[in-house]
Image 1 (cartoon, rainbow, N blue to C red):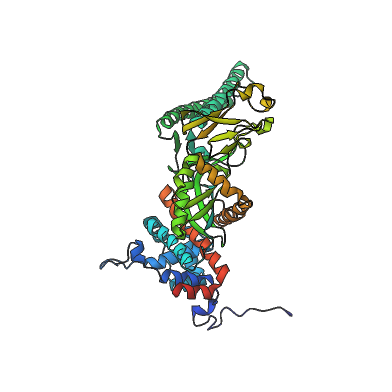
Image 2 (cartoon, rainbow, N blue to C red):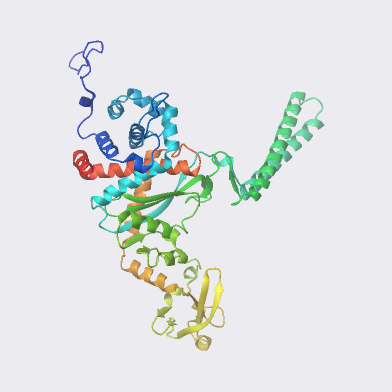
Length: 479
């Protein structure tokens, strides 16, 4: 073959090394997997099957199954059938399991039956990061991202979708009826087979119409007016693209801004982030173990009640305020143009007048104070840019002080939103690249949470391997 590198004859004896360990390099990530799992107290974490039965076929030890799954998620192999194949041909996985090769059903059942324990293992790795002093920065970035469920959009129904599909079916029936009427008026140019086919189409559409009407009735009776047929817990959620959406789950993550480790995460089927600031902040604070924690989040988390809930807990939220009035686009003054004086409890308008407190009124969001100046507005030259009403009124929530304190913190961190973006959005991009076009393979919220915990555990482990290296990390784990 000339001057090419030639392989050995596969039929020669002693072709393989005497030990599998010769195939696994000292800096291979599987050595970290083994070291971490061997140090865990699987009984305390809640894994079932730690005490083998005295009769029947011997079971696989939970540590072996956990090693298989963690190796799979480290290498983007989430499917139990693919893991079964890898266990029989992958040298790294053979080394990790001692050449054990469970069947796919055994592998899948382990993930299904030990969801809470697997989530506890993910939390245990965060505690390891905490013990290594990696969370000294006491700042996290929080965000949410939509992940697709195993539920097609056509298998999800809301009131709007049901009405829209009924309208489409009605239009199709009308179109076929016109075609049938045209065919009936022809003498012999249109064959009978075609008219029979049109009648079959109309009959099928009418059955579909009845099905959609029944489904619309079920949607109206559902608690949140939504039904998913494949995965009952998946929900239709809007995405950033205009007019687009997906049926899936909302994954929340709190990421350390220093080492980009995921310190806390949660999977929800709420399509928005407005009510997640306090819960994610508390979860991240508990994971880091600090007295105070600065939490960076985008405008989707802005909620006065959530910010108030963080008060006194050690969670210091930094969320940009949302201006939904549209006044700035029309060249009008916004609320930020009116300066509040906490000592004298009044607002100073752009013209220099003081707006004092009037009556307290109750609104949906709570009690609101109203500040106005009864006489200054009538002769004010800035009135066209201020208000079309007789008197300008500035509303102030009774707990507005917590929002002012948050804005002050945000003003002291001019690069906060850039830091948030480069911290947490990169993490979601990486996870979605690993998990592929079908990120979740299981159904129902509790099983999806287990899958997400395995992905987060794999992500954090890769981060530590990149930070410290394989052998130093193994020494830290065993210390």
